[in-house]
Length: 61
Image (cartoon, rainbow, N blue to C red; front, side):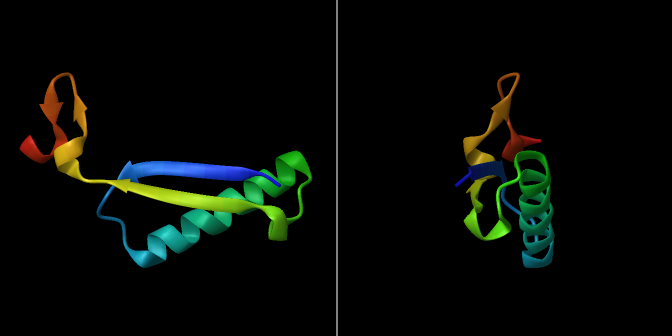
């Protein structure tokens, strides 16, 4: 029963998230042999205020 967590910045559309979940599920099923109905995908969206690279928040770019 694989669990996959995808962490990404906010701002993707529902269609983009739907496509992501489908493709991640397909990839996990193909590589592990797990049946798709046993694969759970979590999307964790982060605010650009709470993410920084090299000391600069994404919201400040």
